[in-house]
Length: 320
Image (cartoon, rainbow, N blue to C red; front, side, top):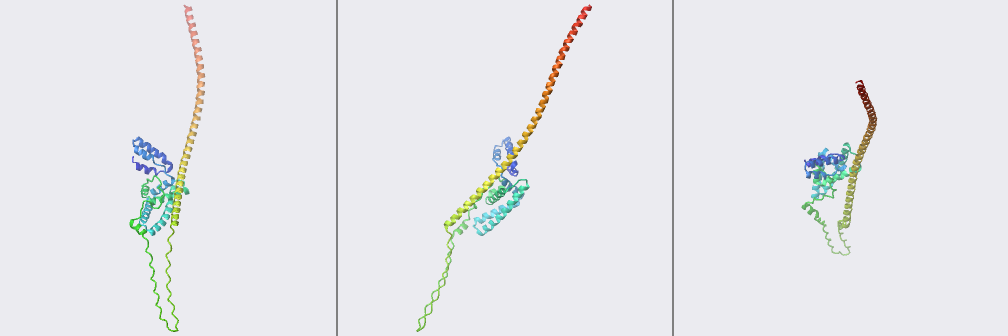
C-alpha cells in the first residue's frame, strides 16, 4: 500500500467522511500485514474544516498556491538581506494576497457543500500566513498532504540575516559633519573720534540630532508586540479547537440520527415479528384443536372397527 497516496486521498475527502475512510485503510493495512502503514495511517487526525478548505484550494488552484509560496520566498530573502523597503512592500502585498485567497478558499468550501463561519475564515487566514514562513509545510500543502495546520509564525524563525547585512545594520551611522565656524574678522585700528565697527555675528550652531528612542520604551513596545502575537495565536488555536468541536458535533449528530433510524427500523421489524408470532400461535392452537378432534375420531373409528370385526367373527362361527 502506498501510504503517501492514501494520505493525499484522505485529506482530499470532506471532514465528515475522513474517519470512516481512515479506519477502512487501517483495517486493510492490517490484513496486508503492513504494521508500519497501519500505524502511520491510524495516527492521522481528522482535519478541521479550515485545514481541509486550504487543501481544497491548493488542489483546485495550484497556480495561485504556488504564487503564495513564491511571495513567502521573497519575504524570507528580504528578511535575510535586511532589506527594509522590500520587506515593507512585500508585507503590504501579503496582506492583500492572503485576504483574497482566504475569501476564495471559503467560497470553494461553500461550493463543495460545507457550511463556513467567520471563525473558519480567520483560521484559513492564519494557516495561509503560517505557510508563508514554513517552507516544508508549503511543500506538503502543494502535494495535498498537509496533515496539520502549521504553527503560527513569530517573525521569520530560522531565517537568519546574512552576515554582511547584519554587520551593515549594526554599524552606527557616521556623525554629521558640522560646518566650520567662521573666524571673527579682525577689529580695525581705532580712528580718532570714530566709533568702532560692530563685530561680525557668528553663524547659528546646527541643531543636534534628535535623541535616540528610549531603550526602555523600545523594550516595552517589543513586549507588547509579543503579547499581541501570543494573544492572536491563542485566539486562532481556540478558533481551530472550536471548529474541530463543531465538526465532531456534526458527526455525532449524524451518527445519532442514523442510530435512531436503525432503532426505529428494528422496532418496526420487531412489531412485524410479534404480529407474525401471534398469528403463528393462533394457527398452532387451531391446529392443536383439530388434531385433538381427529385423534378422538380416530379412536372412535378404531373401536367401531374392532366391534364390527368381532361381530363378523361371531356370525361366521354361528353359521358353522
